[in-house]
Amino acid sequence: MDMKWMQAGYLAFGLIFLAGCSGLQPVRNDVISTYALQMQFQSSQVAQGGESVLLVTRPRAHPGFESSRMAYVRKAHELEYFSRNQWVDTPEKMLAPLLVRAFETSGAFAAVSLATGGITAQLRLDSEIVRLQQDFTSVPSSVRFTLRAQLIDVAGRRILATREFDIVENAASDDPYGGVVAANRAVHRALSDAAGFFAAQAKGFKP
Image 1 (tube, rainbow, N blue to C red):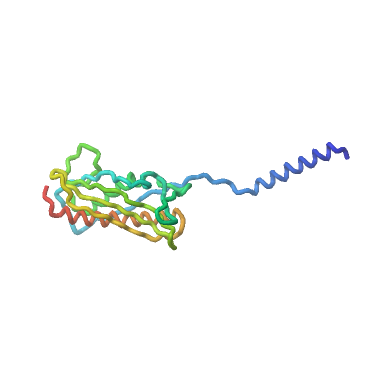
Image 2: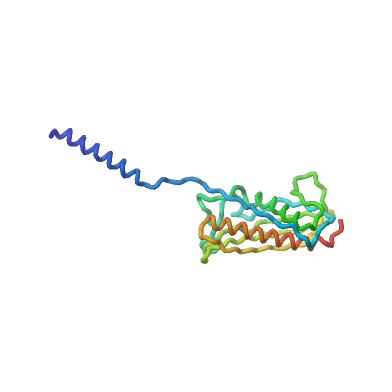
């Protein structure tokens, strides 16, 4: 057989073989999964008909938690972020309307609103996200959410109460989705506790 024809045959066979092997390679998945903080709050039957209007400012976030990246830790003091999983928005933006809803259902205020300007209120709630992270240093992994908040007398320019709410919830699975579910539980508990605590503080306040 002519040498040129043999070389051409080997080349064609090699190309066919490589094409077949490439079909066996895993398909690269660059899809980003996005998650939200979403929850419902039950109306309180303890305190109803408050006299004060409460403004809720958008929470601030400590460094490392101010973006939509989902944070986790595998060793103390080192934050890492999932590459293909993220929040649908920054935690402070997701948290703001949830704070409003939690305090509305406490029944301790005449009205609760986000501080968007143009609204007169007697009380204001300022808060900051200290941490929102999944912890893989133990099994099962867990999510820790820490919120620091203070209730302020607007006219008197004084702080009525300050408290930190630190909640840990175990994850059902050691992956980002397990962390999201645990984060929703942790945030719900923290906001429920905050609404109950500050509702009690506002009970004796006279505008």
